[in-house]
Amino acid sequence: SISNTSGDLLLLLKLSQQDLCSHHSTDSGDLLLLLDSSASVSHYEFSRVKEFMWDLLHPFTFGPGDVQTSIIHISTTPTMEFPFDQYLSGATLRKAIRGTRQLMGDTNTGKALSFAKEKLFSGEAGARPDVPKVLLWVTDGFSSDDISEPMQLLKDMGVTVFIVSTGRGNFLQLSAAASQPSDTHLHFVDVDDLPIITKELRDGILDALQASRLHATDVTSSSFRLLWPKLLSQDTGYYSLEYGPGAEPASRRTLQVSGAHTSLVLSDLAPQTTYEVVLIPESNVHYFPPQSTRVTTLAGKVGTSLPGDKDMVPASCLKEISPVQVLISESGPRSFHVSWAPVLDSVASYQVLYGPLPGNSVKVLEVDGRHNSTVVEQLAPNTTYLVTVTAVYRSGKERSLSAKACTQEGEQGECLECPWNVPAVSPASR
Image (cartoon, rainbow, N blue to C red; front, side, top):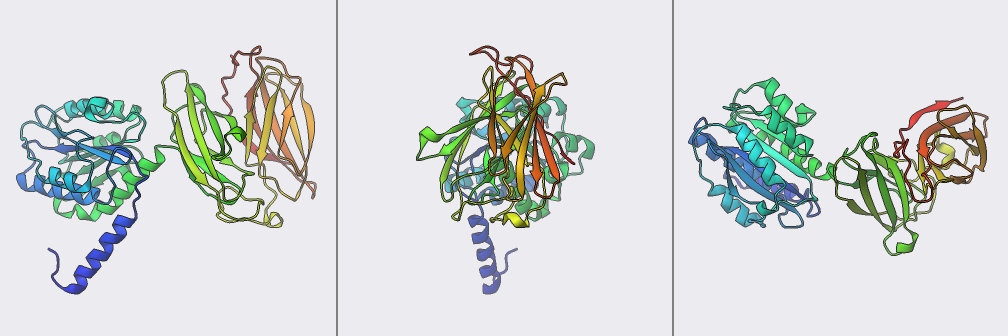
């Protein structure tokens, strides 16, 4: 029970304000609450779970451009309490959760999961096609039917699954059902102790909403790192990445990135500038909608920065490292553009070695150490190439990083042998 002392009350208010301030209206996604409403749950347990759900949700901002939520009952027949787009404010959602009534019946969780799969991607249920999807299943650990197949289908469609078990449950079954790692997506707790996990679970849901879309980290005055969910693989396609200052559409650049990658550092950017970034998954298996974000670089002088560092780092302080990334862009039948990062004062020159795969024919381009890109020309169409960028330091040491690229077939065709599968080769040193 809540203490009546003024000190405790002030502390609770302060903690509540911190909780509210820790979430932002820019977090968006469809959050589906799968509520065990069967007869295996007592009325007391059901009421405590409803309180827990509101405590979990109240810091979020609800609306068509923010978080939307829906409840599906687990019972003999799955039932939707309300669709995603019905309650778009905290006050109305709180009232709806409090008014939710237990249905009783059997614990047919598998049926409810199949029903949930339809509603999570249904416009009729108010779901949105281009936002992260999160499923929270609160259970007493018992199910009358199989859950493995419908749960796997949900996860295959990109849904992040969190499970809270208030009963004993089957650990192996629930661990397999939850998204991985299970130690952050699966919680066992007594129904009276649900408040203990509220913040940790809320933070996990917030991370899922953010990690399930394109976003930026490690922002400096001249660079930032882009992160996105794993949508493709080397065999299923590649990403087209477009970026440029929002105020200068004509200066936008386009890069092609391997489907195996989920991260990329953009460098040599202007300080205190807002960049618009669009990631387009080019899949030969499924359609994935483009993702976009806006990132503003920090104020400061243009200089050398390392991915992951918050501030500028003097080049003299940097170790003799391999190029952090090698990017292939602007590919044609006879040429492609090669760029790399970072550029360091301690590098005397760069060597760009390239040759067709398979084969032993290798050519070398010498590039001044002050530059970080070049164009490789006089190539064969529809051919896979291994490209190695070697940083030659003033000390005489060399560090290398390789990537695969391919030229297009003819003037308008696509590379048939290598659909932009560009796995990075481990950095080498000499």
